[in-house]
Image (cartoon, rainbow, N blue to C red; front, side, top):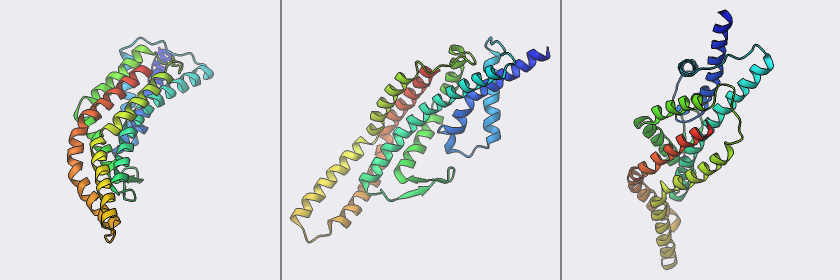
Length: 250
C-alpha cells in the first residue's frame, strides 16, 4: 500500500515536470506577477487530476529509470513551452518591425514584470495577444492540450522523433501571420517615406529628417488603434496554430 501511494506521488511529480515549464517560462504567464509557489501548486494539481483520470503504471524504484523519465517529461514540457514562445515571439517581432518603421527604434519601455527593456509597440502587441488569449478560449484550450498529451503519451514515454517537422512548419506559418498583423501599418508608413523622399528632392531647404519623424509619429498614433483592431483575427489564428503545434508535440 505504501509503495503504491509513493508510486502515485512520483507519477504526479513527473507529470508536473511536463506542465510546469509552460507556467514558468511561456507567455502569457511570464507577463504576469505570479508567485513561484502558485505556479508549482497549479502544475501539481493539474498533473494529479490528469493522472487520476488515466491508468498509469507506477515506475520502478530505479534511479536511472526515474531520471530518464524525469528528463523526458521535462523535455516535453519545454517543447510545448517553445511552441507558445514562438507564437508570441512572431507577434513581438512584427511589433518591433513597426517600431523601427515608425521611427521608434530607440524607444524602449522597462517591463515591470521581467525588468527588461522592451520595444514600445512590440510590448503593446504582446500584451494585446495575452489579453486575447485570456479573453477567448486560450486557458481551456491549454488545459485540453495537457489532457490530450497525457492520453497520447503516458508518463515517461516521450520521444522527439516526430516533433521537429511540425515545429518548423508552425514557425514558418506564424512568422508570416505575425507580419500580417502589422502589414497595413507598414505599407502606409512606407508610402509616407516615399512622399517625404520626393519632398526632399523638390524642397531641399526643408529639414526632412525632423519632419519625417514628426509625420510618421502622428501617422503611427492614428494607425495603431486600427491596426490592433484588424490584427485580432490574425492573433487568434496564431494562438490556434500554437495550440495545434502543442498537440502535435504531445
